[in-house]
Length: 438
Image (tube, rainbow, N blue to C red; front, side, top):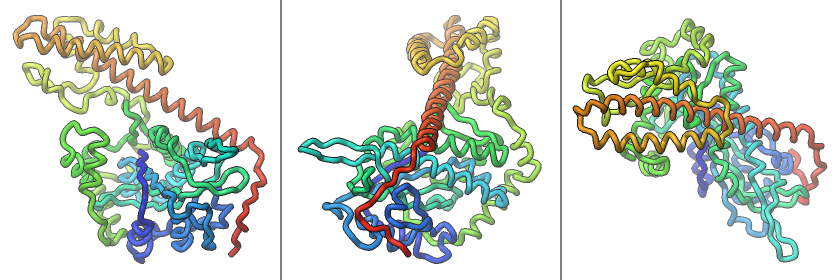
């Protein structure tokens, strides 16, 4: 997931994350990413002095990079790894370096992909246009805890306020396209991590209908145990809150991170995962041998019971096998319900899938109204209810297909972008400011 916000205070990162020795241990060392770091003579490891100057729109040697230095904006693009990754890393610390290698590469892939959406505004002969052939620089900080001191790997990617055009001239950033592609960039990050975990560690990742990922073999109980911050936000935002409302609740309830001993925390996480949840070498082997097909049926289950239309015997609606129970109670043949599931078009275009989703959503709305108007003892109620549940399964299946289609589209764009980068000859860019040497 990607979250974007304007960052007005450079000290927030350097004071809290960078200057307290042994506070975040190795995490305190930020690093630079982006093609503009060569322009500016920056080394890979971030120095606080260079960072503070660039945050204000100045070069590392203190020169103003634009005529409006001080008015430019720095943005924090926060890339959040899923909870499962942090749990796995805590459970198997001897694989932590491999996990970090995978996530660092995912950050690099995502920021390289984001570069195509960063523009500068150029004015020639009174006409202002956007130029997307730019080079930018990001100051990146990696952290592995939430504010409630749960394991939570995430990256603060600070987009410095100035980018360079193809001639090496500096301008303030225009990132409107970044906002438009925020969800897409989040998918690029998750897809890169998923590919890396499977390649390096044999771990399989699945995505839900919203495009969010999880690692096969890690369950909800384990996620919830290490999600105190999420629980806090959802409680404050209220049931059914939108993403925006949850984001506002997050900001309002956020407290300052306090000093702590990271190695001691990691030791406690590891102890809890082993003693409470049984994360051992045997479980690791099972996780590495799992396949997406083993979880396919679970992926069709409802996470919550449909209490408004619960059956008289309080049967919980969980999983595809529920169709058989519904069919039996509704006095219809199970295969008649399963048949319509098999008729869902596979591998169709996004337009076809979206059209099918809209059609089913309309039918579900009509059935909800019909059920609401029927009395509890209506003999036709179970028949309608069975059709209603069947529609729910169809909708879930189509949502998964849509998420898969979107991921393939993003993956194709990413591959094309990488191919273009490889084929494009290295430009001999010059910069009016002399490159600093140390």
